[in-house]
Amino acid sequence: MNGLSPTTTAPDTLEGAKPRLRLLHLLPALVFLALAIVFLIRLYSGDPSKVPSALIGRPAPSFALEPLAGASQNGQPLPGLASDDLKGKLTVVNVWASWCAPCRQEHPVLMELAKDSSLRVVGINYKDTPENARRFLGAFGNPFAAVGVDPGGRAAIDWGVYGVPETFVVGPDGTIRYKHIGPILPEQMLWFRQQLRKAAAPG
Image (cartoon, rainbow, N blue to C red; front, top):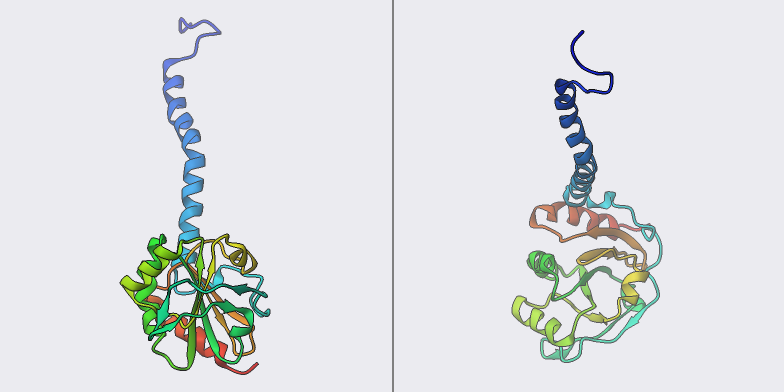
């Protein structure tokens, strides 16, 4: 006889169960962390196009947005933005906001793209105030040939925007050819320019 009653649990059995219980409690957090890492890798890898968009290959949504009040470029009032403005030339549509920290991170990339005469860079100002949006462009420069304000986020919903910044490449025929979620980082510029060349190609 070992001196234990049938209802008594051996001490070594209890000690062995504790690590297993701890692991069970940590399991949900570990699964969430693994999924978050996978998402971030896909989002910021060299191929952000792997994030799906139902709009790729379809005409840009129909919209008409008012201009950013008081904003100007080269001494002229900055125009608003409508779906008809996206035809006739390769267009980069950037969804941005002054309160968006990653928008500041990618802004120098947009300024560089704006120097390319073969394309047009336009913006959708998302859930922002005119004062803050103008201050943002005054501080960091204005890469946009036009900015449409979307204070309620209605147009962004039609574009399938998850959050800001997001950038779309629209072909000269008005068809969405590419979508980039998150900031365009300097190290992603080569990939992004490849997408621009593909979008500019006929058909």
